[in-house]
Amino acid sequence: MAQGKYFGTDGIRGEANGNVLRPDVITRIGQAAGTVVAQKLTARHGGAPTVVIGKDTRLSGYMIESALQAGFTSVGFSCLLLGPLPTPAVAMLTRSLRADLGVMITASHNPYADNGIKMFTPDGLKLNGGYVENIETLLDSPQGIPLVGPDDIGKATRVEDAVGRYIEFVKTSVAGGLSFHGLKVVVDCAHGAAYKIAPRILWELGANVIRMGCEPDGFNINKNVGATAPQALAQAVLEHKADIGLALDGDADRLIAVDEKGDVIDGDFMLAALAKHLKNQNKLQGGGVVATVMSNMGLERYLTSLKLKLIRTQVGDHYVETEMRQGGYNLGGEQSGHLIFRDFATTGDGILAALQILAYLRENNAKASSLRQLYQPWAQKLHNIRLPAGTNAAKILEGAKLQKAISASEKALGKTGRVLIRKSGTEPLIRIMVEAEKEAQMQAHLKLLVEEVTAAAER
Image 1: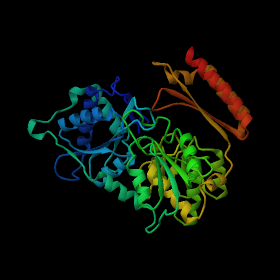
Image 2 (image 1 turned 90 degrees about the vertical axis):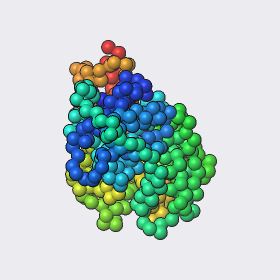
Image 3 (image 1 turned 180 degrees about the vertical axis):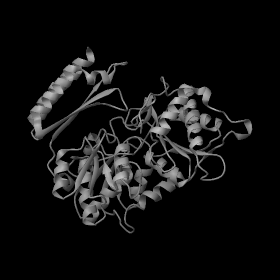
Image 4 (image 1 turned 90 degrees about the horizontal axis):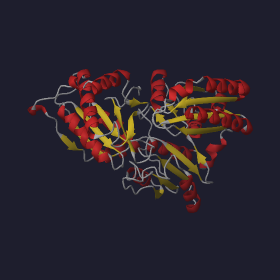
C-alpha cells in the first residue's frame, strides 16, 4: 500500500481517539474513500456503491466502525457490516460480495490502544497509490467531498453468514477428503479476529484442538500471546504434548508455528517446506518464491539447492503480492509469517497458511520439527528502537555518522553477512537487522549499530 501523510505501509494506523483515529477524522476518511472509489467506478453492477467493513476485537473497533459507517453512507454507499473477522476474510468477501471497496478495522499485531484502517479494491488487493493519493487530497480538502441528498443516503446491513462463507472458502484450500484426525494442535488466536473461526475450522477438519488466546475483552489483543509472542504457545505445546502449535496475530493475516519440541518455526521455514512440496507436485509457478529483504540467507541457499529462485522485495506483504502477481509466482511471504498463496488468496492469510502446513505434514507423514531441519539459518537478529514523539526517523537514517557506521559494517561483513536498517511503516520505530554466517559477527555489528542509532535519536 502506498505511503503518505495518513497512510503507512499497511493502511492508516495510530492511537485510538488520537490525532487521526478519532470520530470526526474517521468519518472524513469514509467520505473521502467513498468519493474517490465512486469516481473510479465502472458499471459493474446496478444500485448504490457498496463497502464491506470488518474489524478485529479491539474496544475502539465499535467507535471506528460507527464513524466509518456515517462517512460512507453520507456519500451514498451501502455498508455491509461483517463484525469481527480476519483481514483476509474481508479481502475475500470484498470479491465474493461484489463490493466496490473493502475495509478492515485493525492494527494487526499492535497492542489494543492502537487501531487502524486497511482498504481493499474490488479484486481484494490493497489500495494502490492512485487511490491513496486522491483520498489524502480530500482528507486535507474536505470541501471537495460532495454529500448526497436525503434520498440517496446509504443503508447499513449486518452480513449474517460472513463467518460461514469464509470458513468454507478456507477449507477448500486443502484437498477434498484430507483429514487432520489424530493431530493434536494448539491454536493461539491472540484474543483477536480469529478467536472463533480458527479453532472451528481445525476441529471441522478433524484435529484435536486446544485453544489459547480465544477470550477477547477489548483490551487483551496480542498481549503476551499470538504470532509476536510465541513463548506461551511453546510452553502449551510441551505441556499438552501436542504435534504442533499455531499462532495467529490480532487480525489473523500472519502465522508463526511451534514444533513438537517447542521450537519456533517462522515464515522462512514454512516457505522452504511448501516450495519443495509444491515443486515436487509440479504446482510451483514461476520457478521460485517471493519474499522480502528480511528473509534469511539460509532460505535463499536452500532454494538455490532446489534450483529455485528467491525474489526479494521491500518489507510488506503488499510488495510481495505485487511481485507475485506481476511475475507469475504462486507462493510468497515474509519471515514474520505473512504467507500468500495466490492460487487461493490475494493477501496474507494465517488460517489458510496453517491448513497448508498441516496438509504438508499429513501428506508427507512428517513431524513439525522436520521443517526446521530443511536448512541451517544464518545468525540473524532484529532490534527495534522506539523513537521519542515527534522524532524524524528519516533524518536519523540519513545522518552522516550512522551512514558511515553502516558502510563500515557492510564492508567488514562482505559476502558473509547483511545489514538492513529502516523505519517502520506502522509504528514509531527504527528497525535494525544484522545477519551473518557466524553468531559472534552478527552480535558485534548489531551492538555497534544499535548504539549509533540510539545516540542519533537522542541528539
